[in-house]
Length: 77
Image (cartoon, rainbow, N blue to C red; front, side, top):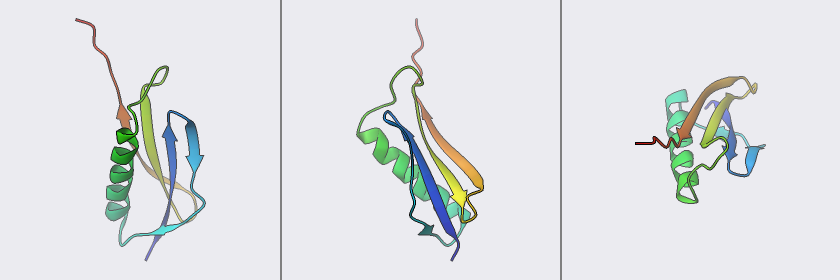
C-alpha cells in the first residue's frame, strides 16, 4: 500500500509528522486528512491573524499532493 505523510497547521503553527501512514489510495488518504482537520477544529476554531487551519498531504517521496483547509471568515453586516 502507498505511504503518505501529513503536515498539520493549526493555531500553534505547523507540525510535520515523521510517521508514514499507509492507505489504499490517495482518496483514502484525503478522507483521513479531512477527518483529522475536523478533529483539530473540535479543539478550537482558527484564530487571527490567519483564521485558517489545514492538513497538507504528501506522498512517500514527500511531494505535496493536496491541502485540505478550514477557513474562518467573519462578514460584517
